[in-house]
Length: 116
Image (cartoon, rainbow, N blue to C red; front, side, top):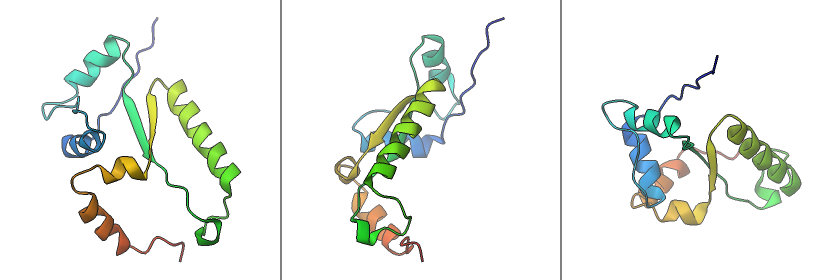
């Protein structure tokens, strides 16, 4: 018997923000995952996004180096692809194109994500 993969769509507001960041349109409707289901049935892979921005080694609190970062990104991309997704790694330039980038950036500065 053929196994069928099930995908859980992200909330429509998050999907819309993510896709507008990339200059596209969302495939997930407020009514549910009909568009996503249609994509899967047509063998179109749903997209999975992650953000990556390389930082100076002295600013890292993770213990990772550039080689480790690269290996992690390659593993992330390979595993999502093996699971049937079309993985996309977005960067700071992509994020800066989002119309609410300044607002989101400001909020994140208040979080204090420097490993402390």
